[in-house]
Length: 105
Length: 179
Image (tube, rainbow over all chains, first blue to last red):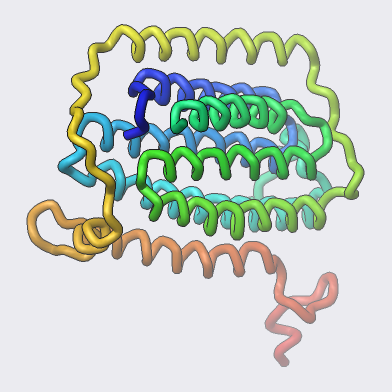
C-alpha cells in the first residue's frame, strides 16, 4: 500500500480513467482510436485488481495474478484486432467505423 | 513523499487520458496513451509490486504502443487529422459517462472498506510459485490456457493480416497457381 493514500483515492482515480475510456469508446469514429480506448478501460480494471488485493487481502495473491492475466489478454486482443484492422484496410481502404458494414459472406 | 508522487502521477494520468480521447492527431494520441500507461506502471511501483510494473513497461511500452504506431503509419498519412465528432454525439457521450462516473464514485465512497494495515509487498517468488502450483489455489490451469491463447493469437494474427496468399495475382486461384 502507498503511505498516506487511502483506498478511496486510488479507486476514484481508476474509475475516472475507466470512464474517460468509455467516453472515447463512444465518441471516436476511427477503429484504432476505439482500440486505444479499450486499452484505457482494461488498464483501469487491472489497477483495481491490484489495489483491492494489497489493501484488503494482503495475504492472498489472487488480484496480483489476475492482473498479469489481464495484461496478457489485453496484448493478445490488441494484436488480433490490429491484424483485422489492417486486413480491413486492404478490403475497403478505410478504418472508419461507419465504413465497416460488409462482412466476408 | 509518496503521497506527493501519487498525486503528480494521478493528475498527469488524467490529463493525458483526456488528451488521448480528444486529440485529433492519431500519432499524438498514441504517445499520450503511452504516457498514461507509464503512469499506471508508476502506480504499480508505488504499491511495491515491481514485477507488474516491469511487465507493464515491457508489454505496453515495448509491444502494444509500437504495434499501434506501426498500424497508424501503415494506414494513415503521418499528419492526418481525424474527422471532428459531431457535438451532439460528444455531449450525449459525455453526459452518459459523467452519470456512470457519478454512480461509481458514489458507490465507492460510501462503501466502508475494511482496510488491513499490515504492510506486505508482493514478491516475485510467491507469484511464480503460485502460478506453477497445481495444488489447491494454484494457477497452473489458467497459466496454460493463457499460453495456448497466446499461441492461437500469434497464428491467427499472421493468417488474418496476410490476407490472400502471397505471390498470387488478382483473380487467380490458389489451386490454379500450384498447377
